[in-house]
Image (cartoon, rainbow, N blue to C red):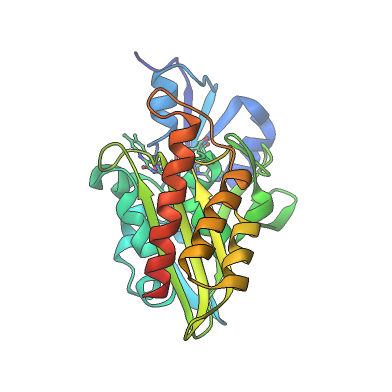
Length: 284
Ligand SMILES: Cc1cc2nc3c(=O)[nH]c(=O)nc-3n(C[C@H](O)[C@H](O)[C@H](O)COP(=O)(O)OP(=O)(O)OC[C@H]3O[C@@H](n4cnc5c(N)ncnc54)[C@H](O)[C@@H]3O)c2cc1C
């Protein structure tokens, strides 16, 4: 199928974007990498009157390290995240997760901000942002505000983003010494969206774990922090009995929807399998 007709404007700066968003409201859509929006238009799932192309606003692309935080511009492509030496050093979780996003052609165009705005429940970046305690910077004609990732994702493809706002960057605190991370997911084929996945980080010292954060993707309408499961490992450590108990607890914390290929029971089972693997990886 082909996209319905739409008008197109290539923005030269954020002021132009704000102006167009104010004028067209819900009838306008921002176009970043186009890797989710264009398929949606072609499938006629969306029919905006105007596309506002922000892809040339390259001042909002790139990775910077400042004052103990990593700043990732909204227009940073998935591929650039994978290639960033700063991210490999300070937030290796992102460098590991990027391998699971689609295929190189899509990673070359798709952007960090686009993925967050899309808020697909099976996408990698939203879960990573929640686990890493990211702040999402939103800008509009009336100013800027920051929203914690945990509050930004509100439901199925639903976020705190208002129709007149643009994501400009994401700010992530650099974890202190002693933190380890792991990212695992299961997909039907390499490059497919995850059936289920987990982004994890924890402070490990010998056999003791603290600040364990397990955030699941594909396991509900939005990224799910499994707080009780995480707390159980913190209290009981890495033992087999703790794992069994945690896997039971996890089933009560996730709420996956069945799809064409996987039942709810299959998804819960896969999440439990990933939990065992991710805890082994953190302990190793
Ligand atoms: C075959 C295929 C497989 C894929 N597999 C995966 C996968 O495994 N994991 C995964 O995470 N993704 C996957 N994707 C999606 C891909 O990662 C997209 O790049 C991403 O979801 C959207 O980024 P984009 O820059 O292309 O955004 P666009 O498609 O341009 O926009 C997507 C939405 O976000 C809005 N938007 C974009 N940027 C901003 C901004 N800065 N501020 C406010 N709103 C904005 C747009 O208005 C639109 O509603 C896949 C895509 C395809 C086609």
